[in-house]
Image 1 (cartoon, rainbow, N blue to C red):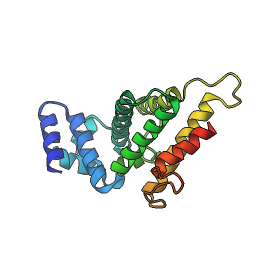
Image 2 (cartoon, rainbow, N blue to C red):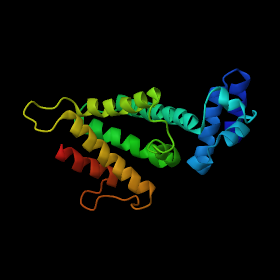
Image 3 (tube, rainbow, N blue to C red):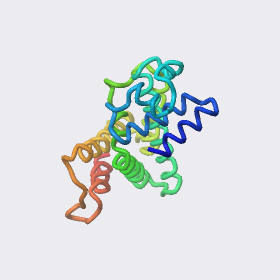
Image 4 (cartoon, rainbow, N blue to C red):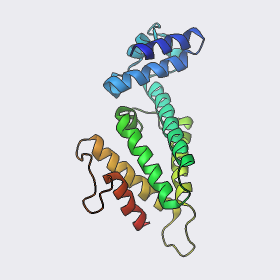
Length: 201
């Protein structure tokens, strides 16, 4: 918390209050979840008056939306970094994508959960839409072109891939599933589930 507050103060003193508020919001989110991210709490962490955030965010939804955009960007950057180091084959790249998303979500559960809290975000925000679209297009690129004889569209394949990855992550975060390995091949459960998905695609 100390470093996050220090970073917020430093950013504000250099004239970037908006960035300082997002940093403070991320710190509150990591510590206590989305309900803890309020305008008043974020202002306190950033060391500014409670009225100061209004210069950049009209309400709590706008603040949380900016935070979600930042998180989407972090996920995308992690995926790009992982894919840049990985093999070129479709199956291997999809496995790398899935593993990166799973590890990000498990490492930052409150950040990942916020991405899907439509009740907290401004669905009309163009930056949020663009950030989510980048992730979607990355999955499409990983899957590659659909064969001309294929009876399932590229979009349906992307939705299927994302649904399985997101579903597994959600079950892990909710505590319904625990970490484990496939009983038949010994692979980590998440990797084995991707194998099942790939066979279906």
